[in-house]
Image 1 (cartoon, rainbow, N blue to C red):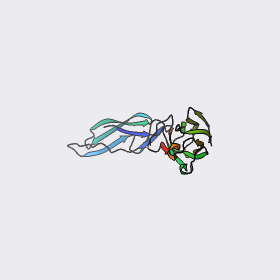
Image 2: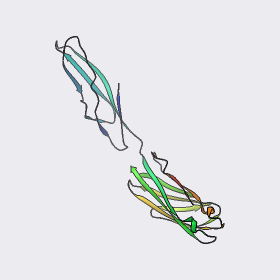
Image 3: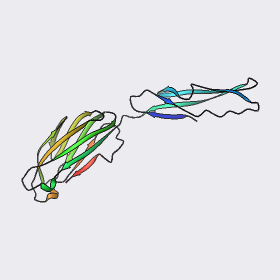
Image 4: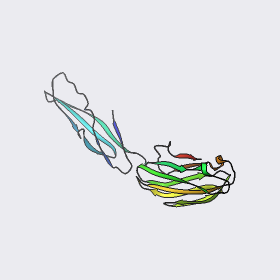
Length: 193
């Protein structure tokens, strides 16, 4: 059967190893040959491999199979962490929390965005990002980072003022998204309390 391998977006070839087909004959086999051989570099798409067997009498027979190299969609793993001290929140006194969005790769994260949905019981003061811009529309803080390169992070400090004396009223839900495939979604959201 065919041999299929996947490469990251932007990679145009792969070294592929495969097991040689099995040949048998009622005479003894003199030689077998695969072209291109196992361990060769194969380009994107379908690559035909020809396996030829020759017996001691000089008779040959061939078979073909494909080595298929696919390029997977671009992907990046954004991880969201938060540091907050909501326990110190008190009525009408500003409280801040810090959100960190890290691109764990393997590629640059285009369209990186953080959304912080604030509870009704706080007043928005500001959000300061280390990269990009943040806006607040109706209690939804949206920070657009543009592209976060692989291995980098963006930090956002959000300041809100509780308008309800209950500490739980400071809790908000924060998520991050990208325009690429996100291979690990479990680290894309957190609750700030």
